[in-house]
Length: 380
Length: 140
Ligand SMILES: [Zn+2]
Image (cartoon, rainbow over all chains, first blue to last red; front, side, top):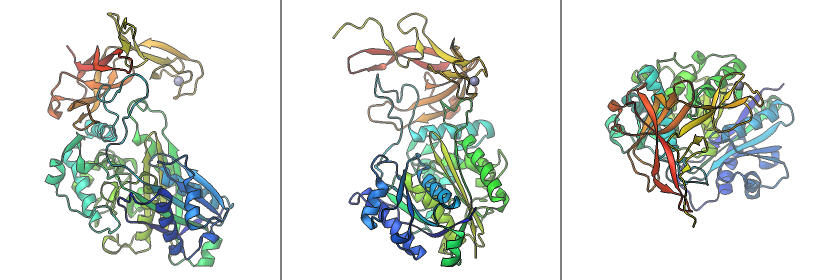
């Protein structure tokens, strides 16, 4: 089977664009990725389009209505916050299988403001605040408090994740925010669901990202100088765990995906030079240091305390600013993470460049649950 | 509107609403022992078909994890404690932890709790029916 390469990848600056439609936002990133690859929409053999908010709205076809209706296969994908990564993976699979040589993957989302989750059923009475809380900040607070229970992780350690990621975003012009948030500011921000304050919750933004994936044959034809090799592409759903149906388990689903991804890539966590992981809340990031094997179980608090995961550290995590500060347009996030890692592997990340990066990992979680992991490698 | 004879259960797995013996019902897989809330045909742990047996869940348990909710949807009173409780003998349930100060230092992990049943905070459905709900509180 052919190796698969990323030849073009880009994202729009995340923000709020109520004047644009979802297909228009998707089209913007699609054209940027095509330009990055030096290709045209006429060169694409298929489009894999990830979007959540209009999952039944044929967004992929409407993207083509904006940039060129060439009659190619379009697959519309929805998989919660793993939507973008799932679209990318479907594109990867089609090339890996030898069906196509050149395909396009797009992730796009337009978000409202405010709390996600917890809306509850349509019959009876509202359950929020009666049978606990189903809001996303609460669900991830409870997942974080499980780590506190097991390893003594503190509110301050969770808060340091936000300090780090907000700092990183000051170096990323495509992030929604470029604002330093010192520890006191994070800890004293409005408490949403303890231990997550407002500055420890990801930002709801509009955004899009896209990638052009090609076969090895096509990559050689186009030139390998900026190509990025996809060493592993993995998708898992949540395996049964005892509390899973009451308390979504983002750990087991990630560990399962990580084990498969490292095996597929033939590398270990010690070989990874940078990681973009699913920091939908500050509490979540801490869990994934261990889930991805970046440290031993129980070491995550120490990792954040000792700056091992900051730019310049042993394995920088979320140098883009992460979902916490770059922003989290659900369907676009998985491809935006791939853009970030690819940019470092190409040596084009400017002020936030992770020096000498050769291998990077991206991770997303869709609650409910799905986990997508990609391991990417510098070629030239 | 007809007169409501007894309060309705907040969830179908709350049994005995309106009696003096309400309880939570689980469904246990007789092949692997996994316990679920609510009626189901098949086991999502081992895949066994038609092996579910209704069981009465304990009204005692231990606090596994929690969050203290300070912001929720409009009209929902905050702060409150959203708690995950492992029931003695099996089964995990999520609900409000009441009669405790909503501060981390007042909420130790593994704190023994009782499951108690009461009116659903005055919430009524569109037909004016009242509901009975379950809550956790520090064990007596
Ligand atoms: Zn079973």
